[in-house]
Every structure is written in C-alpha cells, then in structure tokens.
Image (cartoon, rainbow, N blue to C red; front, top):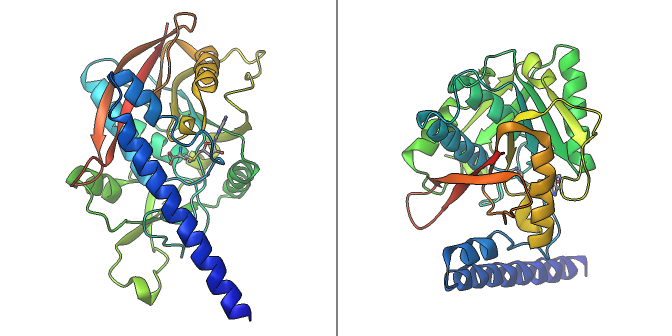
Length: 309
Ligand SMILES: C[S@@+](CC[C@H](N)C(=O)[O-])C[C@H]1O[C@@H](n2cnc3c(N)ncnc32)[C@H](O)[C@@H]1O
C-alpha cells in the first residue's frame, strides 16, 4: 500500500543519510592522522568533492566572517571605511535549519546582507557606499536575489527569519544572532514556529530596500569561468564560505587563480575552506581566525585570509 511504500522510502533514505554521515565522520577523523597540518586541512576542505553541490546556508558562517573581519581590523590589516566593493561567492539559499530540520519559514539568503551588516557595524564601510556582487552558479539563488531586487525597487523590505538552532552556541554567537541586522534593517515579527517546536527562539529582520538594491546577482562559476574582463573595477573584499569543499585540489587552485583576477592589489579574500596556494597564483596566505560556534567539541571554523599581491 501507499503507507508501506512511504515508510520503506523514508527508512531507506534515513539509512543512507546515517551511512553518509558515518563516512564523513570517518574521513574527518582520518584526516587528523595526516602527518602534517596542511595535509589534514586539505583533506578536510575536500570532504564533499564527490557529492552534489548543496545550497544550504547558516547564519554561523556569517558570524565566522564577522569574527575574521574584527580580528583583521584589530591587527590594522583592514583600515576603517576602506571597503566599498565586495563579492560574495555562493551565498546559498536557506529553507531549513540543517541541524534540526526546522522548515517553517520561506526560502531566504543571508550572507550578502550579513556581510553588509558586519562591515558597517565594524566601521569598515559606510552605509550607502557598499556595492555587493553575489556570484553563484545556481539558478535558484540568482533568481531569488533578482526577485528580491525587483521587489526592493518597488520599496519592499526583505524579511529574513532567524530561528536559533538548539545546539548550545558560544555566547558570542548568541550575541551576533541578537544583533544581526542592526545596521541593515529593523526587527520584524517572526513567523511563529509550529506547536511541536514550542520554545524555539526565533527573530526576524526586515532588511531595507537600499541594502537589497546594493546587491547584484551575477551568474559565474568561479572555478571554471572568468569574470567579464572588460569590467576593470575590482573588489576590495571577497567572501566564500562552504563553497570549495565540493571541489578537488586542481579545481580549488583554479578558483584561487580566478579570485586573484577579481581582487584589487592588496584586497582580501576570506574563506573557511583551506585552499592550495601555488607560487604562480598572486595570492598570499596571511593567516587565519579560528572561530568557535559551539560550547562543546570542535564545532567551529578557521577563516583563512588571502591577500592579492
Ligand atoms: C553550501 S552553500 C554555502 C552558502 C553560504 N556561503 C554559507 O556558507 O552558508 C554553497 C553555495 O556555493 C555555490 N557554488 C558552488 N560552486 C560554485 C562555483 N563554482 N561558483 C559559484 N558558486 C558556487 C552554490 O550554488 C551555493 O549557493
């Protein structure tokens, strides 16, 4: 009957997901046995190279980026109000919380607006003087951003929902979640979680149309394509999180080479994936910011800083 077929389908997929998760955990643990740290990082940052590209996104990657930007500002690597042109590679599209599967809110993208928010909060850019280009290969992501852009032209806000995962986050991540959007919009009434999720903390932010209009979606495969060479305006800052673990070493090197052509000399590229630098690529690895997301275990990221030579 239909019920039995559904049950078999769900169980089969559950089994597959558990198996996949176990394999990833094993690969992750095996990477720790590599003889040097670079080999370990490289292995971890190619974890999904034989897996389909996913669009999922989380607010925590943007928390990590804000941590790295603050760190670099404190070290005087990024002067105040020095950033105007920014690119976000692979902003993703979020419809569910990955850890717990909350799916009571509509599709949304966060990262381009989160970066705007962080840059203004940290005084690295001035509101109204930021241009963001969102590069992606996904039609869904690009169309979503285009449609938000069209609605912003008509004066409409873009409302993002921010349910907070139930994993215990570090206090700084909770603080980031609370202040998310302070520079780009106003708090809004969140979509109420269904009764089964009673107690889940959530908030929402209505992002101003001018912020949405500052973000231009562009179809670009950063691994295999080069950006329009006739466009000589280069970026001060490029961000890409959770994008390159779907690729192997050669593709990662191609991406780094392409990114070097997009940056101004002295401009920075921040990513949480370890990438293979080569002497032929005019990008220098300048260090990294370790960021913790969770109270326990090793849940967190290293945000690597690359500088265009
Ligand atoms: C897993 S999501 C990451 C979303 C977000 N950056 C985050 O960390 O939460 C990966 C994103 O990268 C995009 N992507 C994957 N390969 C790409 C490529 N070669 N060029 C541009 N975008 C790419 C995907 O379409 C998707 O939007």
